Image (cartoon, rainbow, N blue to C red):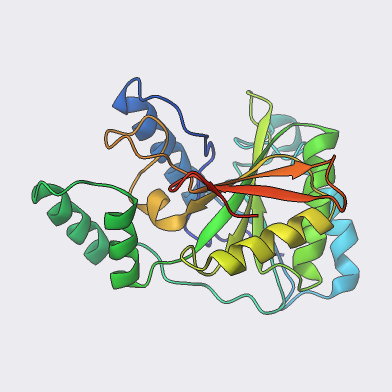
Length: 253
C-alpha cells in the first residue's frame, strides 16, 4: 500500500448535465477535485502487493469509513482518494502547461467551444483517457460497489479505479478508467465488465481532458460534462446496459 497521489484526474463531484446557473459552481467543483488529487491517496497496487493482502486492505479502507478530511479520534489525516491499480496498470498522459496554453489560445480565437474542439485538443496532446463514473450513497451501497469494482481491477478485468472517501454530504463517486474516450468500443467493453462485476446503478462517462480543463456542470461553455450515460435494463432478456451517446443523443447499445 502507498499513499502518494497519482492519476491526476477526475472530480469529487462529477455531475450529470444541468442548466448552467453560475460559473462558480464549475470552479468550485474543479477546486475540490484539485484539492483531492493533491492530498494523500490510499492505494492498493496489484503490480507490487500480493493478492493475498487485498481482502484485508479492502476491509480496512472501506470508503464509507475513510474520512476525506481525517478523523481526529483516530488521529488520521486527510485522504484524497482510495485507489486500486491493476496488474498491467501504466499511467497515461496528463494535462500539462502546454495543453492549458493551447486551451487558452483556443478560447481567444472566438471558435465555438464544443465537444469536437476539445476532442481535437485531446488528440493533439495525447490526452485521451476517460472514466465511467458512478454516484452512490455512503454505507453499504458504496462499500459493496467498490468491492465489486476493486476486485475486477485486481483480477485484471479492469485497469484502474478509485473512490472518494466519506464526506459530510454522504455521497461518493467511483471512477473506472479507460485508455481512450474516442474508442467507443472499448468504452462499451468496460461498461460490460462493470455490469458483470455486479454494479447496476446509472453510469456516466467523462473524458479526462474535461477534468484537466475544469469542465464541470454549470460551466461557462454550456458543455455537458459527460459524453455517455449507461442505464442497466432489468427488463431486457438477457439483461444489459442501454447506453446513450450524449453528444449525438443516439443509443449506442
